[in-house]
Length: 288
Image 1 (spheres, rainbow, N blue to C red):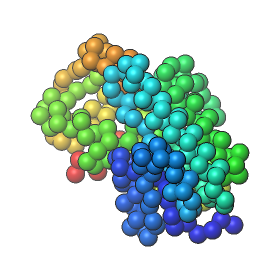
Image 2: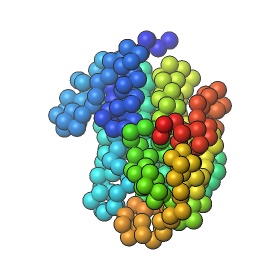
Image 3: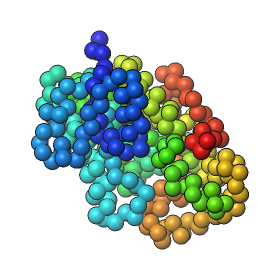
Image 4: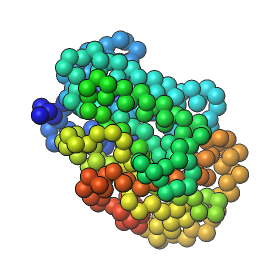
């Protein structure tokens, strides 16, 4: 039986997900040890992690940017290299943590779908290979005898951050609208359900391996646009042509112009119940 969980070492603790997760962990009485940039440079990472029951890996540079070759390197190192270093530090700790929960993304999957953990097509793209390498490094923790969980994030919706933060201003001004024809799949998860999934994965030792962390009911860009317009009482007649985003973001525009239809088959099979299944309920909660 695993010992009682009370100490969490966390990379990416100051990001949108990390700050929300750390707040909830502290509210229930757990100690959170942020793994900061200098910890990875100082050679003292294992020392800082040595008392952790849980290691949570959330590090990763934003993907909604122009992907120059230099920025691609930053995206890779902030995910794959950081994960490799965390697992290496775990190997130096005896006893090691009870559970390692790492991050991936639904960019692992090809555009379209539907995709589940067991029935899917991998993306043969930069993002797809990035996610695959990211997961490969995380799964090395399993070889150390550490229970390992990887969550593939959908687009995260929440208050005061995440995907909605940059979208709200134009929508509030009545200038919101679809990207392209709006038919691209939009697989999402509410931050409250994400946090509950992490708590469950820590407490339930049957959780192991890879899980899609997305709502059971994906929508489309058009569905998201309509939900936002309705929640704010604003028109959504504007359209952003895909080529404009490609001019602005280059290859990185695919984050907005394409999408994956992803289902949380393994979480549902485990009996996990989502608080937010429908995009309208999630958006209403986020903008209230």
